[in-house]
Length: 294
Image 1: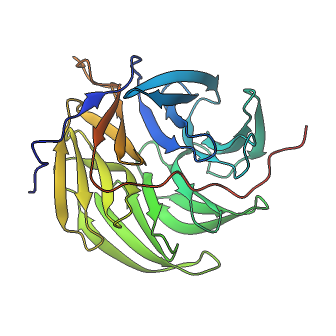
Image 2 (image 1 turned 45 degrees about the horizontal axis):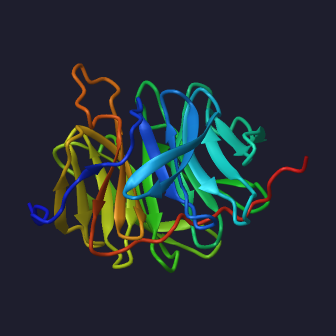
Image 3 (image 1 turned 180 degrees about the vertical axis):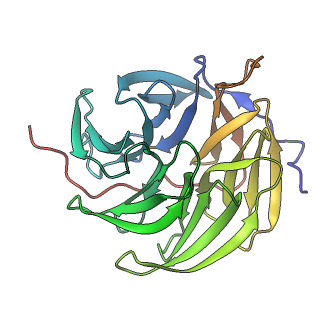
């Protein structure tokens, strides 16, 4: 296993500690950072200044909050997967339903992200764990199309620069990164396993400008960098046991973590962490949908 260079130093970026921080997003519209606390149903926004995350707004969105995606225009707010559907969260803190009853009763929305075509891809997870959930894409008109069935815990997903390859994690039962070919209309084909992730549960994922995949590994206290062919390139050891997701803010790898379920959490568990890496990343791709009219 390839360990990180000695020069890598993991820093605690946030003063706040969260129960289950997830889904960090770098917003290209104003350079800010967004993330969620899954256990409290809150959508958070803040800024990064002098190597620290400065907390800003915080909005209660729903009981089971999932992934956020920025809309394309400045001031247009966010689409946020929550409970069994999708809502719009305005910059003024308003919450307006967009899509209801997408996930089946008893399931709830989880991780997601947008493709270069502007579709918002988001999946659900089941409790108790059972492979009957799904991954959908939601187009600019708000039409949701099921793209993949038989999912248990839909987690990290990212697209390559062209949008023709989707990298995807259904955490259970295989604990693997998979890849799909993506047609222009969003149809998936050519499903294949990139690699198995051992020693923990693969969770959130991002991609850098070299096409390498960064994966948060829950219960392993690690973030790992894999090549598109599945080769483990680097492992960064963390002071937090349960990293949940990652985002690149240029060359700053931002890592959300959870304290949920830990009997004796450390000062880093539940914090937002950061580490400088070599290859930069890009801001979160936007959803091309429209915000609701007042």
